[in-house]
Image (cartoon, rainbow, N blue to C red):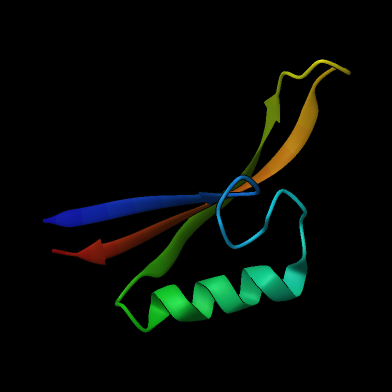
Length: 63
């Protein structure tokens, strides 16, 4: 059985700002808990000033 987690720029690791070093730290922290990166993608998120691109990272681990 598998379990999944989705990281996005709204995650506590990023405080709303994308920072590659923060992403690396987050992935390494989750890796210590058995999570692996399964996929990455971007999504258009609607907003008041128009849509914005957001990075999504999908993590997977065995339960």
